[in-house]
Length: 453
Image (cartoon, rainbow, N blue to C red; front, top):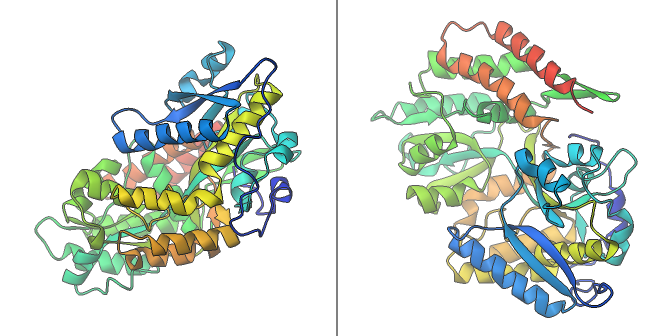
């Protein structure tokens, strides 16, 4: 849910501007009467993700050694909206549970998470978290119900090798959508099935990308009016964005003939060197390398064209409303140590580098959740320990702090589903009536937003 970019109440509780001196990272959780405080925690990667699972389990052991009064019971899995309410009512919800940034508003409204505001003074953080991210976990009264642990923003991922072959300068990625269109034409002109620009339109991913596109033009897909929300994309900028996409697809023929694509389709094309550009978050890059035989040196990442904003997302953790004060404190101690301890950043980067993991991108173990001195120090550590050509991704990293971040709309997945139909119509029907499909989607989205409580 998008709210004003103001310093959050939690920011007052944080020890801002203290560089990397941790305010204490072990042994301070009060034990419950009679012994240890035991907390269940989800977010443990599955065994099929061997490296991530190894890191998580090592962290649990190290945390327990540093905090002998806390016993962690790790559980696999993340947020599943379909089972969340059942697990909570049945007492099966973990004490500390993972959420996407689209979830907290409804969880807070339904009183399905503990109010941690008064407990934060006992578990202070060293450094200031991005206030826009902490705001996601607050209610209208400013009470805090969770903490962000990872963040991403959308950018323009491009193939530097294809840029060079097409006579484009890979050091100067497109800064406007008009430049994207011109670059896509030149790249697709290489022939042999090469696609200049790819776009999604299935499984809510088309709506997700259209939202990103609109954010880059300085508009959101929904606006808040008092206590209610309204669709806000059936306007001149929405029509202009879709007309631009239509022209690339049908006039320029720079998007290929195969449509109704999902993320793996574009990743497969990019990994095979057959795609010039697509909208993506930084975590796409290691996927291209690890799953689709790509090479870090072939790719570049730039901010979304337009320069007026981007879509941000991410994840965090909340604590069960049934947790005791001792469990809340233990849970916050775990979250601080595992995800929000600046003194562990450099060590984690070196640990990942030793395992030949990519260092230099704004992805875990150096998630982009900090502002101020901690973020500056984190960037220095990343540069010093880089295992990838950081310069290829520097345009994105440099632009991130100054680019307006837009959170996903309320009921994001339902909104994206309605916008999927718009993207599908534009990409599969040359004679589409853009105004009509936008009006139809507006009606659907207003129906979704009217259900918000």
